[in-house]
Length: 149
Image (tube, rainbow, N blue to C red; front, side, top):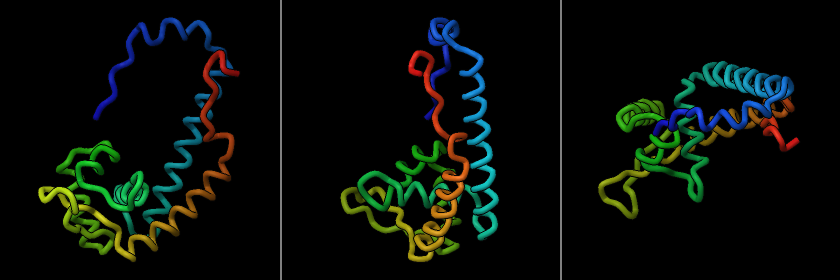
């Protein structure tokens, strides 16, 4: 689940190629991300959800190739523990946002789906969040790597 630590070998060759513009671009990008995350967190809370519930619903609907996911898959997507995701699914199910269904290929697992209520809420939030990303524009575009300008 966690990323490997950055080593001296990872940074020594690239440090020399960094310019002031590279630092400014990365700082602008991180600032834009923080602005976006703060906006989405506030927006989600305004409709009565927690940011984690929104992330869960987005991970389900955005799962590659299908519109459901297992708890194990969701734990990976959310970078959270299996037990934490079970609790999140429990709370979201109690709020009518998701439902568990038998997994068609693995009797040990369950498939977590959005309910109609969850789909409706998610669609409204995603539309608002996409509009905010468009507004932020350049601030949330990945900065170019040194040497790729």
